[in-house]
Amino acid sequence: MIFTDSHAHLTLPAFDPDREEVILRARAAGLRYLCTVGSLARDAEGALALAGKHDFIYFTAGLHPHDSKLWDGTSSSRLEALSHHPRFLAIGEIGLDYHYDFSPRDRQREAFREQIRAARRLRLPVVIHTREAHEDTLRILEEEKAADVGGVFHCFSGNDEMARYAVERGYRVSFSGSITFKNAGDLRQIAAAVPPDLLLTETDAPFLSPHPHRGRRNEPIRVMEVVTKLAEIQGTTPDVMGERTTRNFEAAFPRLRSV
Image (tube, rainbow, N blue to C red; front, side):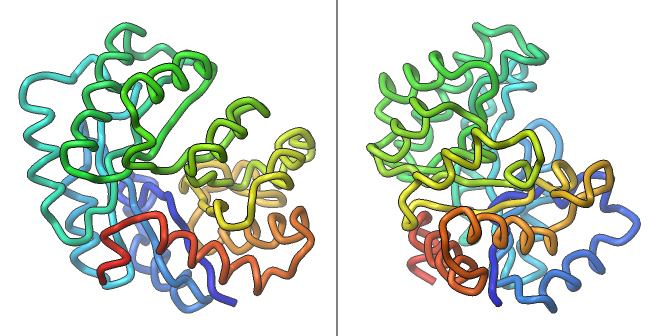
């Protein structure tokens, strides 16, 4: 079985005690690709360094909506500088989070728009975070023509309308350990309807450990359990789903297609 973790946060302190062991454990189990997500506010350069250390690790960077209040005149130039690295795949994660409102909503919308514009200039996809902000997220994506560069709805938790929007415009839809949760019946119904060629798998590690590991630190090897559940939902085998979502990951990012 091969599998891909399209979204993890391996530079966070939760992995400081055993980062290399975590990476090698997943690799030994069949991990083909790992994308670690860097925050412009904290650890983008650390994500770059990690990608430079392992030939199967790639990275993205962006200003998370929690940090949108920090967007300033230097942010776009930092993104552009990072984007020249050959293992840089996309701008993200970016978007809107109205659950916590750690940044004012007007600043979130401004940073989201500016980063989509940067992605279009650089011809790179976007990795989208949206929580309790579905209407504004879709409106901004449409107004800024984000579908021109495409991207991923990361850790999908939206409704049927958002899933249809993503599918109709060719975005990839990425599912995490949350599809294994007992109360996630609606999410599993959505996952069943997503076309197989648009599916991705992720851990969002160290967050969202799948059942039966809830409450413990998540890590990339546990994407196998996401693959297994997604295979069950779509009526196929884990081997087929692991291969399919790995190929979808390759197709989602122009940089990978050129490797």
